[in-house]
Length: 256
Image (tube, rainbow, N blue to C red; front, side, top):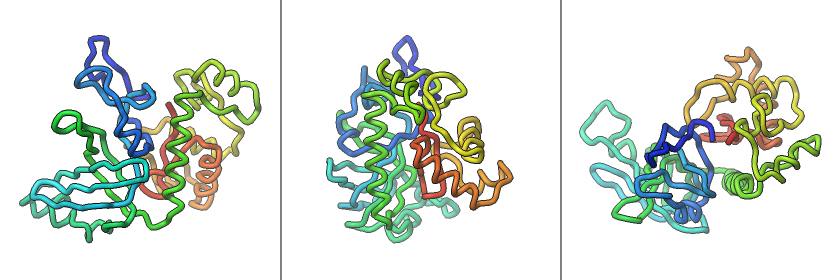
């Protein structure tokens, strides 16, 4: 996976900048090949993760806010650390109050963070972002993305639009270093419009955060109207080569 390596000596390796949609069950069943190693799902190291769930409890302390979430596959806590006593910080306990970020008990939320262990084998997600979900379709879409990536790792990539190439790669049990990045070898891109290909190449080559690139930034980088970027985004989402992150107009590349 891009941005991910494991050192021969058994250390944690270099920084892993990938973002993977998961279910809570996958988080709870994640394994470590050795102590202090990165957690793995489907034998692949985890960087950042994103999951969705229904909020069962919110507990505020002076140093953190703890959210307990349930997605139907299991329950897990997400812990957001705060810095008390810093008036200018957006990370104070008051700023992270449930009413401030829009989340509430029995509502649904999307959580971004890293899978960690506390007090032995108890898994938690240390989070930097907990956002409310107001459209139930976002919940369904997340589970489809998590399932698609699980199948990608366990059964290989889907066939390409042209047939043979993708099927051949799947039969070989995976793709090359480029994943879906056709120009870099391994895997094959589906047919797409010129604007969608420009957008894909930008997402592939532009340095970015775990949350990907927003539509406004893509439009500015490519000199395109927002309407064209939105259509290209829909095309790439339908093709299964990108996924939405913090909102419906921020995208990251589904590339492993």
